Image 1 (cartoon, rainbow, N blue to C red):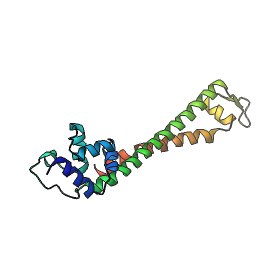
Image 2 (image 1 turned 45 degrees about the vertical axis):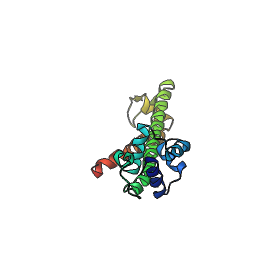
Image 3 (image 1 turned 120 degrees about the horizontal axis):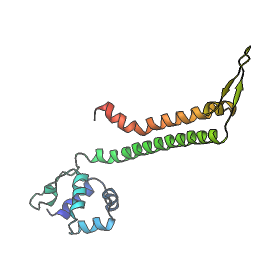
Image 4 (image 1 turned 90 degrees about the vertical axis):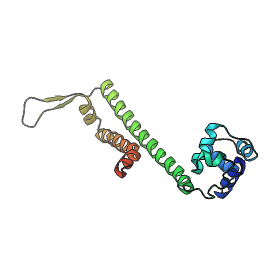
Length: 175
């Protein structure tokens, strides 16, 4: 059985159209059509096909070997793993964005505390002398922004944990 026949049989056995296979392999539909009519793909595309269908290059290219498994063993896992990977990647991106937003918030609070310094003159009860406060702490106290500062710190913490979640999950599962 020739390569183009094997490719067509594998594609159909796994319920894929030429366009779906092309999308999975990151090539055009016309390329898949050419491969199924007798053109042999280049080495990189052969490797992609081999990995996608979980079969060896020998099994694909050897004209003497007639049979390749109709339903490839890892096909369902492969089909389900792609959306899962995409979801984890989106999870990481969302976490990184949240951490970046929190960092920008803290940076802006720090800049504003430098540009608009706040001085707190707070004499303790029964004392003649007073306590003078300046800096970020005084700025947060005078402008009542402690909640915003804590929100930014929380965003950074949650964002970092969310961004690292896929790695932590692999670590905990021992993979």
